Image (tube, rainbow, N blue to C red):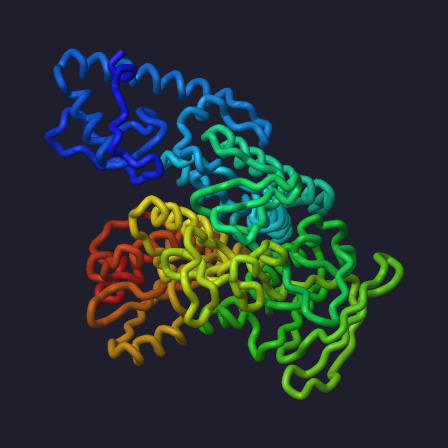
Length: 583
């Protein structure tokens, strides 16, 4: 009854969408005002006005809070049974839309990968009506053709490797009789089933929270605040637009891809067959992970790398450790400093794939090899073609969209102007081509949309390569840190922890690996950490948090780590940075 008689303050602008303020600590209501109290405005004046009305007397306040609690339970319960069809908006949330009469939605996200999903979830959390243009690809590259299914292949092939490693098993007192067998199709199905399950969960979370998932691809029309559904031609009016189209595999000139015998990571994840000899063009994260899968399943691998060193983007010390642990003891050889100038597909079991290589500097022919299959792992390029960017006056470089630190789109990379109400996140802006970086950027974009200035600290975002053992890092390489310290006038410190001195690693029979901590000697703050060893991808998070929080090695050295765990490898490194010893 109280809510029904509450009149809207005429001074409130119908287009205002500023977030409601948190009441003072003396207010009877603790925490932010519930977003479902009003479906037309989030502005400060409405918040104060409503708060005054709700706190007129204790009886009214008590009744109102009971009513709101009941309403919240009803809304939550109904949302649990929201329709799962992507084109249907959850009716339980339809009354909560913040969009006024001039707009269909507050936020439209073009792309439904991890970045777009993160942006959409945070948009709904802020009470903004949200549409996601999925383009028929809910989950994007990460879920369908990248992070998720590749981890399934690595998990299955990793088990095969472990069970075939007789010396390792014998050291643990384990004997395996007979041949270790695997089903190629079974492993491929495991990867596909996992991707499908995660995709379904992701889509259901969007619908359940009230996002409208539009199946068509969203494109810009050239007019402000407009997004067109490419599938139906319908044009939507939205207040803010977030571009999250992701990326696609880069195929160099001269390479003919048929996704059967010559394939990108998209085709490799289908695991159509296990080649006896496969060439992997490129030795970055993707190429290294697939070399792990193929060698575990019995293939021989040849890396073809255009740069002078394998794993060119990795810290050099870690790359040397990786070469020793992941390449030398496996059926892998490599060519460096050469281009795969021409790659001609073959026919499985009948005709080999032909690869002609030329010197990267002189461009002279150096070698031709014939293999059973070739995987192209030469990086990725933005999926920004035919999005209507040109119509909005947006220039790209190699497909990358220029953005400022708030993720606002700029008209060009050098001296560009902000394009009002348009943001770009994830692989398309090229700042950091990682799924979790895209999600962080999406959340940041929403923060800036609602008026809370936020900037992503990309130096604190970790990365990992899920080989056996894993490689993980946060911050610059040692080579980059040396240059940075020199340019900024501070002294670089370095400390190291070793897996061979760790009880848990030794118990697992996995004593190979190191953890390297780089820090500012003048301030004690952690600059970067690089790890290769058992579960490095899990160990790096503590380090990323330290970089993000500005934690010093002095503080970290006094923090207690559980014994016996792999985290003590980091404890050794942190203590070593300040001259302490770790038992």
